[in-house]
Image (cartoon, rainbow, N blue to C red; front, side, top):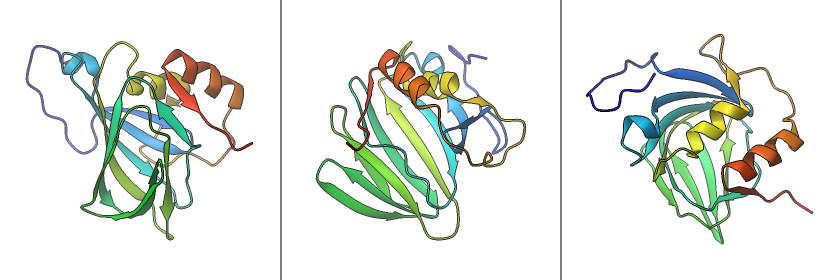
Length: 161
């Protein structure tokens, strides 16, 4: 449901919830809500989660850590990020993160600019509607589907060789 052209507020449990690549993503603002300025999602990530190294060709990405601890890698830079930390990851630079410790991390993910091929739509298409607001059961991603959808959304996945 788009909120374009009107103000809105969501509670902590509101927003489209998606099980995506081992994490729970809750959409707080999608591109159509913000006139394609940005998208915002809250992600709850289990300990040890580490997406493959990847880069976005058309969008910058930023993380604001609400809970937990992550190691963020962007190009040659590596940061340890805890609650209250912010990391900006520019488009065109390979990046990933890893959830450290024994507790989940809760992260706000901002992507900008938005648009019809925004990152949030990749998450929606790659994931599944979350039946509960919990981290999904562990399981391997469908790599071929991941690569196909990543290409559609101008994301380059850089699997180790």
